[in-house]
Length: 430
Image 1 (spheres, one colour):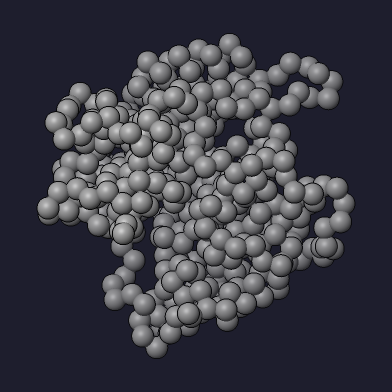
Image 2: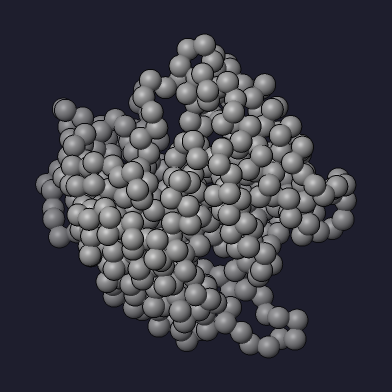
């Protein structure tokens, strides 16, 4: 059913936090710093660790879009200055609009339609195009752009607008997470997506209905207008894909974050050895202390210089030698990060809970860790979770809002005034 624009879809404005407009959480102001495409330079990652201790509570948190949150902000002006100096605020006016999720393993594993170079450049050009469009200042902080290298992992995030690479030269438009018939040249991707986003901002669904995302008002007419705006912005003629480079990619979408030694890029044609290893780790409950985050930045300098944050609340470090990869995995394990596929914490998630969230009815993070047999606290009513041991994703929520819940199938333990209820995917079961 299409949404009506005569009745407002939203009765309040978008309160999604940013790095400038902070959220007043129960444990103090919260800042959300956008990391377009999850591509965080090592020096910028180190700067975030410093800011976490100098103006925050000493912890670094990851979101389900691979962005970074700092909590308990004591000095908002100091945070702004530090982010600006680190290059993490290229446009203060657009900082909440820079929501870009990209395939984290693009160019690292030989899968998808992406070589070693080009994908990071596409992320950067899209980010720059967003910041250069005055009309996108009013874009909701919840609106999501997606760049999928062809393997399908970003499709699972259901981006409002995006592309899925169709070969070395072309990309297929995505609207509300679904593939369009529109195919554009890869060089046109930033301009095409910005044009479609401007059409969304200018639509009656946004002006009169208060829609934040395409799914809020995904009428056929709106989707057709966004598609038309994208086609009109394309400058390079593209024929229908016919050559072998436009065949479906061999890579498969990952349902969760890979850990350990996760990828080895194919050797160069001459067989010369290279720094081709990628390692992955998960932050337990998406959180780590500033010292560990700083270690990630140091390790990234031994590789290609990037800490890649992912939609699965983990990190990837690529461009490593075999020896460096092994040493880094040992160090991250000692720091308490998840680097073993058998670790049940790999599939454990939770919202903020008490004491950080005033809406929460329980300290769900402590209970979640107790359910995995870690965390230093025990609850008589929480045995080690059988679903975790069976390899299922388990999510703990402090209230029915279920903030940050997984987008994939999961078991949800939800706090209520009468105790916890367990539901499949957060929905009531019969």
